[in-house]
Amino acid sequence: MYVFFLILMIIYYAGLPLFGAVRQRKKPQDAAITEEARIKGYIRIITFGWGAALLVLALCLLAGISFYDIGLRGISLGQNIWFTSVTIILCGIYLIAHIYDAIAFLVKPKYREAQKEELAKKHPNGAVNNLLPHSKKERKYWFFVSLTAGVGEEIVFRGFLLFLLQAVFPNMPMLLALVPVSVIFGVAHTYQGIRGMIRSAAVGALFGGLFLVTGSLIPAMFLHFIVDISSVFLLSENT
Image (cartoon, rainbow, N blue to C red):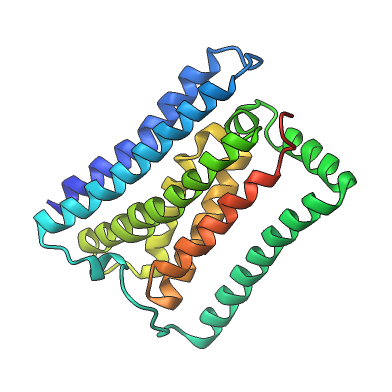
C-alpha cells in the first residue's frame, strides 16, 4: 500500500509538472494575462492545494497513519546540536532576508526597479511574472495562495511523502530521504525553469531540515508562508 501511494505521488508531483512544461512551451510567452484570468488561476491553486492536503489526511485515516506520524505535532528538538544550530541559523537568515526584501521594496524605489530587473533575469520565460499579483485585488488572493502553499505543500512533501519514503525504505536515513523529496519538490516547480527548479529543491531541503530539527511541520509551514507571501512585493501594482 505504501509503495502504491509513493509511486502515485511521484508520478503526480513529478510527471505532471514536466508534462505541463512541455505543453506550456507551445503557447506564446508574451500573451497578456488579465486580472480575472490571474485570479481564476489563484482559485485553482488554492482549491488544488487544500484538496491535495485533505486527500493526504484522508489517506492517512484510511491507512491507519496518525497525523503525528506525518509531522502534525508539537516542536521537539532532538537532533545533533551542530545540525540543529546550522539549520536554525540558515532558516533565520532566510527569513530575515525575505522580511528585508519586503521592507526595502516599500521604502526604496531604486530597490523596486532592481528587483524587477532581477526577476526578469531569473525567469526570462515570463511564467513567474504572470503568476505573481499585479493589483491590490490579486494581492488579497495571493495571501490565501501563500497560506495554501505553506500548509498544504508541507503536509504533502515534508510530511506525507517523507513518511512514505521511510515506510518503503525503513533503513534509509532521514537526511538521505530528504534528497528525493526535495528533488520532487523542485520538479513540481518546473514552470520556473531550470534555475527555479534547483532553487526550489534547495529551499525544500531547507524546509525539510527545519522539520527534522524541530520534529514538527509547524515551523516549516510558517517559514514557507512568509517566503511565499513576501513575493507579493516583487512587482509594483499594475506592472
